[in-house]
Image (cartoon, rainbow, N blue to C red; front, side):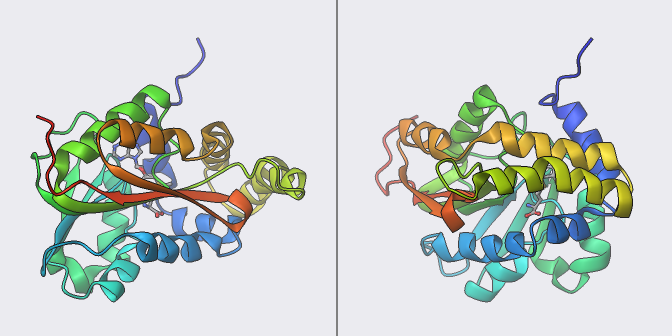
Length: 245
Ligand SMILES: C[S@@+](CC[C@H](N)C(=O)[O-])C[C@H]1O[C@@H](n2cnc3c(N)ncnc32)[C@H](O)[C@@H]1O
């Protein structure tokens, strides 16, 4: 029987096994672009309405976006990291973010099955957490975002994407499909797991369909491409007078 790569249990296993090497992997494989895109994601997010905003980092992983978030918004009251992989979060807290632990809470859960409270967030951010969902799961995620944001609350989510139409796309796909598996096999442990991350990325396409799903939930949404579409983002807000139940 073929594996369902979008089954949350399967995804959790992939990231639990990769957590040790994830930071190195994502840096090497993107030539440092992931770091730049995390910063650009934070820059694109509209200003949260509260003076000490509280919010979620969905699919937070090792918390790589927190330094950018706290630099732009030093008044942030708290960030609640939501991630299905405890391995990724442990990694975050032990090695990278022990000094900001007072601002960070953690929920270990499948975000789509979680019970995050209604209108509990001034902001929602997510970096590179969209690709491990299929279309139906994206539609659910759009509902979660609309449900959790306070009226006036803001969001930004970014994901590595397929730069369709870019003349260097064949080179990019060669990098993703040939070079990355080679780097994984020669330099990194857990080769099959990292190779799956490449598969998720090519399956994802870009964030334009997700933008439409967020609009269908009544949110204001801007769709933006970075670096010829190698990464795409959705950013916006929940209208201050939000009418849905
Ligand atoms: C590619 S990593 C991104 C991590 C981090 N945000 C970053 O910028 O590097 C994707 C993360 O999404 C998490 N994840 C995948 N599916 C999830 C789900 N259904 N619920 C919560 N987290 C999930 C994984 O455990 C993993 O840590």
